[in-house]
Image (cartoon, rainbow, N blue to C red; front, side, top):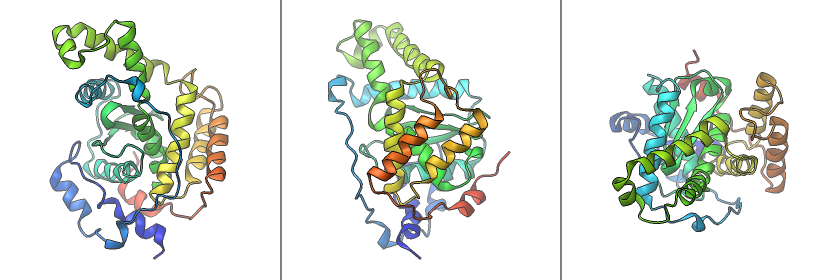
Length: 289
């Protein structure tokens, strides 16, 4: 078994949380996957991200509260969560494997599948990440799914949504106080959440943020051992399905632009196709409906 394939078996080793799936199910799913050779994950690829400390003050407690509030609304708007424990466990294992390689691995990333047929995925602060059933079904293998989740992980690791919230707080005149301030005036908190949801679900993030997430997402997935060419393949398939207009939102780059950027990162970072797609494991875990 080559190094790439052995590395991908470390899904259970790096999956630490039990939120959005039961601890018992996670333990059962990961049993038997602990190969001591898998603990040394190669991090030979480095991609600089923007310094975001200037976005503070947003404490970890406040980020978690904001993330939870946004997550509840995402689930409500997109048909709830799929009732499929096998799929939920699998997506969490893949997602947490990729999150373990990101530039902000110390938060509890949580993954869930929305019961919606659209081709979409969302990331909320504090590591709440969602992918629609439609997008999971559009993928052909685990490497493509890993790249999608890597893109959303990148939004969290670079604090893209937090930057929007910080600007909203400044506009609203909220410069300090954090959760204590919001507890005293819940309407302010609701206004901040509504603005974040408008940008996330109705308008979409800005072009530069989406392209940055594409660049980082493919690197994160490659660090975990997946074939770095898989993401461009998925984007090309989505272009065929949706056309090469302004994709999901007016502010988004076209699929053609995103493919060019992803292919550029693969070349610039010297990432090599290794054939680690894991299509069979994907097919066993994803019952397409």
